[in-house]
Length: 566
Image 1 (cartoon, one colour):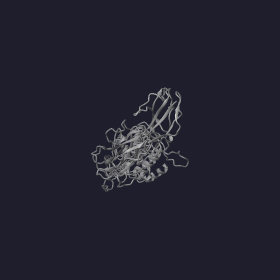
Image 2: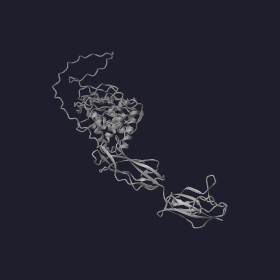
Image 3: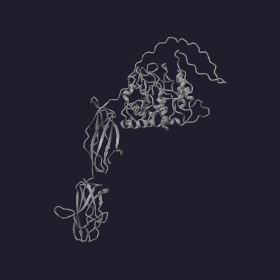
Image 4: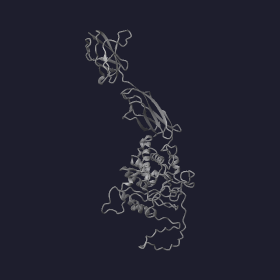
């Protein structure tokens, strides 16, 4: 596949000397390389295979590295001798860069799980746009040591985008330039910029900020990046070029087969600067053979001659410059529109959620339903809403989840999954959160009550008797709720007096505590399967007579059992 891709690149690059030099550098390298030559102000270099488009692009359709991933199979007899050499170095991604991609994937999954953004796609774009921030040349906060800048978008070979940031990001007060490891043009960054490392700044030169912004940009609209067509559209929104798409796709597939972390600054450096001035922070290695560049007079700068056997060179006279024919200045082009930002979340409101109560082990009859609205008050569709269970509870959403994200429907509403109560009774909360930069949160109280029984009865009819100092026969009871067996119901057993207002009896039959001492109130008993409960052993003391054992269930059902000591 890589060899076929390389052949397509070579065929598409014959129209420009720059692209031809890129292929020459690629075939001579020990892995991906061959960036476009530096734009020295001629303005006529263009990405091989790219085409002009009126569609928006994060980079302004500025040039990119025509890197190809190394082959995964060795060179076989009879194949081309111009194949890149296989090696594991290209699979190494600098630690901070890799961490930024994975953090962005997690963040987007929390705010827009339906997009299914893979971090390997960010890595592929980062490789093609900046060689993983020049091989990981970033500080401890993830900021490049010096800005990574693309060429001036002056309409000469690229889009014409006049300055939009007063040079704040790109240092150019005349035209915009793509900025940072993910190469955002300032006007796009103004819409999509993020604070990915929570330092209070949105900096396109910071890999955490840039990676998160790129992830959200790729997920714009309702894209699902697990769908090939959506992924292609997302990549083309970054740079309108089929060759760019094929290059990113090639790296994406390569990284999905496996990567590893390398120290910052130890990544594989691109073989030349990305294009455009202001790339001093890249510290990229020069190409082994400098590509030919357009000379001011329209000719070509000659390549240096190899030394003779004696180590010297024979100087050649420089031919007089040729007067170039008159040229027609390139037409002024209209800059492509910035991507339309997604509708802005204005509010999140309750959409008819009823009381959230359930008995232990049962499903809640109500579910949380909310409605998102935009800043104009209209229902907002496709807004991501995250539902989360908070508190000391074993209640879960269906599927055993404690947090899940859904998108709102056309009417702006979305409903949580069914809540399934566990065995732990008590109160907890359910939250619904929408939005990332300025999130809106709704909180709902929920309660789980213990399992209940409205009736309890003995399963046998024989009298319960024992001789003084002996043990009674086993006593079994069954609890029911609305006629159905009630398992897991709490039961308390108490030996009571026969007074008009019974109290715990201090004599007569008793249970034994853990230390063997008499106990006449025993809480914490629970019915099992079928609502059945066999009481612990009951002992008779030395005082004959008739006594009463009262059983009380959670829910208020009671049963009095007569115990006779003979």
